[in-house]
Length: 302
Image 1: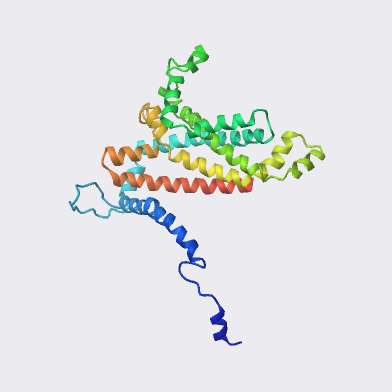
Image 2: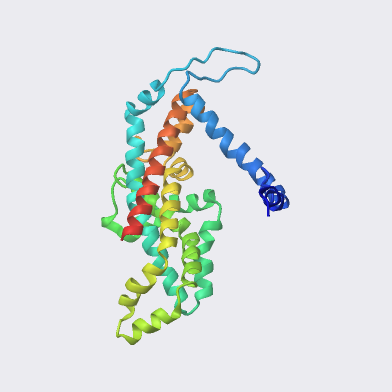
């Protein structure tokens, strides 16, 4: 058989792949990603390296390239640094609580506790409920005259939770953990279905108690899902905006709950400095990417 006949028999690879119909069906989603995500991200990178400002439609004004000046301005701004510290406080509280509570509650539901279906609905309802209505409830609960302080009595903090510089961000972290927990419980429940029951039975036969089976069978069995939960929790925390904006009136008290995304809104929209806002966004993307890589590496090695 000649090389020319082999070439004739070899299927040609076109730019649309081996399955043109599949590529055609995927095209609308690719266009969606390009328009909604790729173009804004690329435009934000462009803005971050230029002296950019909004102008009236049809008005052309030079926007010179300024290199890393906008990044220097952002990194030397005390409020920007404080926003990243606030986010670090949030992540330190929210991420471990999300992973531990999500896995423990999912394991309890998977074990067949009574009223498991009702608990699943109860855990998932806050995730589906509009943030504005839930925020209103939490503001009433954690206000100075709210139910929480009434229960605590003399142990209640003064000033109260959401107006206390030391407690505002931890309170927001608890709120987000409670609101998002149902979604992560569902992820863990799906992962637990793939852990072979034979492993639990074998461990039980060897004399392992429930806690030992949880540590040596359940936790390793859902490690891939734990990595996903870690990354999603980090991304959610880094994009925190609605909760501090509504719960603490835009990052109060005195910037104790301001976040980078909230600061991007303030700098870019309210103060008309989109170039500095874009630089903050690029820094945030880099930080989130590094944290996600570290979380992935640590979870694989443990």
